[in-house]
Structure formats: structure tokens, C-alpha cells
Length: 122
Image (cartoon, rainbow, N blue to C red):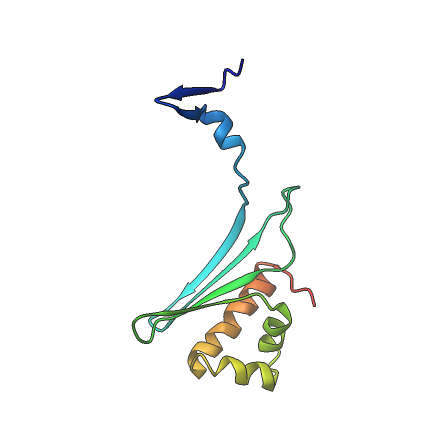
């Protein structure tokens, strides 16, 4: 006999504490920069041991016109190249943002890497 569930009107319900234990929940840490033209939201996940993965991703929101456009970036080599002023990486960024926003992205990445000590693996 199972005591952690109950049947009501032919529908089986699981006791709430057991249902919550079955969820696969992930933890993350995030940083956000926002101005009138853009939002950069960087996140990094924790692994099963509770240690942050080295890599992170960024959700970019272009707020220059509605509806706002979103992109998700997870290419840490590209992040590193943006920080280092690589012409190819900068050109690809300028396809979706203006120079001021690109400068803010570079400063945001520098903050993440230099001050918060998040890592970029390549």
C-alpha cells in the first residue's frame, strides 16, 4: 500500500513533499547591465556538486525598437575575442548593436572576468 498518494474522483495525486523532491532544479548566479538601448544578462550554472561551471552565457536584449529582440550567446571564445578587440568578433557584434552598446558589452565582460573573477575557457 502506497501512503504518499491519494485518489480523488479517479485521479491520483502525489503528496507535495515527494513531488518537490522529484524536480530537477538547477541553481545559477547572474549579473545584469541595462541602459535605454540594451540589456546584458550573464548567468552561470552550478553543477551537481554545487560548484559553478567555468563557462557562462549572456542573454542580449536589443531595446532600440519594439518588439524587443533577444539573443542568447554562449560562445566564450567570442566573448574573449570581443574583450580583446578582435576585428571579426567586433564586426559580428556590430551586426546586432551599435558602437556604444558594443563598448558597454566590452566593459560588462571586463567586469565579469576581472572583477567578479568568472572564467572564460577556450
